[in-house]
Image (tube, protein in one colour):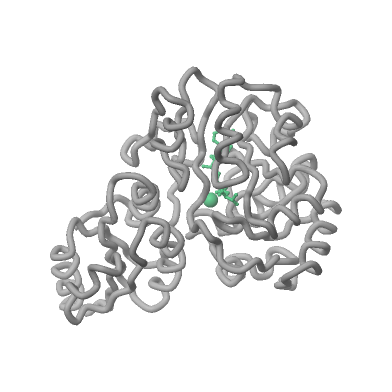
Length: 330
Ligand code: TXA
Ligand code: MG
């Protein structure tokens, strides 16, 4: 199959036609690119799993053009959580809510809940509106690969597997949405993202239970048990800039060609080491991290990423980097 990359109105129109006809296309969102299928069409949803090489027991998020449509895919949830819809939707938040029976088992992996998201990216919303149906979509990477934040990232993994990539430029947020389970008494973060526990607690009051990277194996998000965000070369997290430099020199001696990923302000501390600066503030680092990993695995054979921090959005970024590193630290 030939994979086309189109942008603008033409891309939205053609993409929506393909989805309505039961096909699969890649589309931009503010978090990462997704692989879209009509959520009401079980065969189309199966085709998404096939294109990604994803196990069928890992559910997909249902994407909607407008938050007014949330009631069409859920059988209802505690009204106190409407405050989250008002505060963070459209935006990088997925709510896990009781599912409505019209949503097929293929989407939810047989769970009685469904993940619902209303993206904020204007091109994405235009595409979802043109589809006119709820769109089931995972990130548009091959299973276990780094999530795509540009059309060319998608092309690397999906060339020949899908007919169309809708090019909407670079994803503005840069990591996947926060997944928040609101089916219990207290909200539980199943996957951290740009909407942080602090932001959620700020709206709801009370506690937000959070799954730290270390207990993810026991997390109820089925996706968490799989290896994720794996670059094609070795990757480690460095506790400090000096340990990054030490590791760099050791790898050099072994004949490897390493690279260090760090905050821009730390680049002057790296001496002659090859590096990629991720930007200064948390939002920039978040926007750039996947792109940096995509690039680093091509130009180096060993990635050393500075520990970027343990609170706020930096903690969400580190959740992804720790997975890329398989938990390895130096
Ligand atoms: O930002 C995003 O969320 C991107 C863009 C494309 O919207 N999508 C995305 O989808 O990251 P995916 O399939 O790569 O990750 C969805 C995560 C998985 O870990 C999955 O297990 C979890 O959400 N999930 C989906 N539905 C769920 C449910 N009903 N209960 C628990 N976890 C759920
Ligand atoms: Mg994914």
